[in-house]
Image (cartoon, rainbow over all chains, first blue to last red):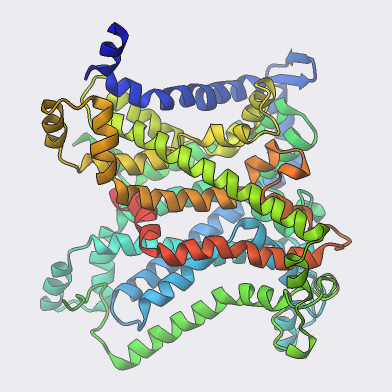
Length: 298
Length: 289
C-alpha cells in the first residue's frame, strides 16, 4: 500500500514516466557509446581482447581504403548539400507562390520516392545504370549520340548515380520542410515590401532567405549527418559492399566491412569514432557560423 | 478564403504560371519515371532485366502476367515472399505500437510536470539525436550477442523503442496543451496515470496519427539493423529478403521485380489515406528548429 502511494505521488510519477527512456538511454546509448570508445583502443578477437593503445588509429592514418571512403563520403555529402538545399527551397517558394497549378498534387508526387525503401529504389537505379546499351541511362546517352558506358565501374559516374538516387528520394522531402518554414512567414511582410517597391528577387533575398534560416539550418544538419553516414544506397547500387576500385565505399561501408564482414570490431570502432568526431565538428562549426549559440545566450 | 500570395513571385502572371506548372510536371515525370519503368518491367521475364538492364518500355506485346501469377499462386517463390511480407508486417506493427506507447509516456513525463531533472533529461533526448545510429551499431551488435538477442525480433525492436524524434514530437505537441486539465482531474480524484491514459491520451490523438505513420514508414523500410540481427531466412523482413534476390546469376529476378513493386503498395496506401499527417509529423523539427 505504501509503495503504491509512493508510486502514485505527483513527485514520483514523472520519473516513472521517463523511466523507459532512462533505461533505454543507459543500455542502448551510453553503454554502446562508451564501449565503442574503449573498443577503438583494443584488438578484439573471439575470446581474446587486447589493449593496443592508438594502434588502430595509426593504422587508419595509413589505410588507403579508409582515405577513399572518407573522400567518397565527403564528396557525396557536399554534393547533397549543393543539390538538396537550394533547389528544394526554390521549388517550395514556387509551390507557395500560387503560381503552380495543382500544387497539392505535385507535392504528393515529389514526396512519393521517399516512401520506397532504399532496397527497392536501389534495385531500380542499379538496373537503370547497368552497362548494357539497352539500360535506361545508356539509351539516354544514345539519344544524344554518345556511346554506352559502364556507369557503375567509374568513380565519377558512380558518384553521379548515387547523387541522382539521393535527389530522387529527398527533393520532395526537403521541399516539404521548406514549405512548412514558408508557412511561418508573415504574408504582410511581402505586402509591405511590395509597397516599398521591392521586386520578386529582392523579396526572396531579403525576406524569404533570412526568415527561412531555422529551416535551412535544420535541413543542413540532417543532410550533413545523412550524407556522412550514407551506406545502404551504395550497398544497393553495387549489390553488396564491394565496388570496383572502392568507388562506392563510404565511411560506414568501411565500418561495416571491417566490423561485420571481417570481424575486426576494434578497428571498425576507430572508424566509427572518426566519423562521429567529423560529424560533430562540422555541426558545431555550422551552428557557430549560423549564430545559433548566440541566440540562446540572450 | 483566398490563398495569400507570398514567396516573392509576381502575382499570377499567366506565362510565369504556365512555366512554373510545366517545371513541376517535368519534375513529377522524372520522379515517377523509375517506378513506372519498374512497374512495366514487372510484366516481363526477370531475365530481361539481367540481360538488358531496366529501361522504360511501352511495348505491350512483350508483356505478360507471369510474374504477378508467380506472386499470387502457391509456389516456393510466393511462399518465401509472403513469409518476408508477413514478417515485415508483424515487426512493423509491434514496433509502431510499442514505440508510440513508450514515447508518449516519456514525452508526458517531460512536458506535464515541473521537476529538477526535467531539463537535463530533455537535453539527453536531444543528445541521442546527435550521434548517428551507424556509429553505435557495432557495440550494439556485440551487446545483442551478449544478451542472447541475436536473430530475435526483440533484438531488432528494443534499441529503437525510445526514438528521440518521436519523443521530441510528442513533447512539442503536449507542451502546448493546457495544464489546468490536470489539476481539475486531480481534484476529481484521478490518479497521475489515470490522467495520462484517460484524459491526455485522447487529446493527443492527432500527434499519435502523425507519429504512427512516420514510425510505420521507418519500420517497414528499415534494413540495416534488421540485416545485422536476423540470421535465418525465415525471419527476414521484406527489404532484407528482396536484397537476397539480387544475385549475380539473377535466377530470382522474376520475383525480385514483381516483389519490389508489390512491396511499395502497403506504404503507398497508408500515404494516400493519411497524407495530411505525414507532412505534419515530418516537419515539426524544421519549424521549431
